[in-house]
Amino acid sequence: MKPTLELQEIVSALGIDPFRFLAWQEKELAEKLQNAYLEEHKEFDTVYGLVV
Image (cartoon, rainbow, N blue to C red):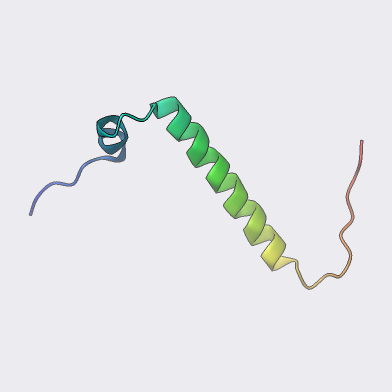
């Protein structure tokens, strides 16, 4: 079986800045968590928020 490339190696091979990739990953994760939360609570008709 061939060894698989690590994600960091793939990012480097593609010439992507690793710090920008990490920031993108964190943004995607935050969006997924927010969407999961909204899906979980979508049975509520009203959404309350605090505006500062």
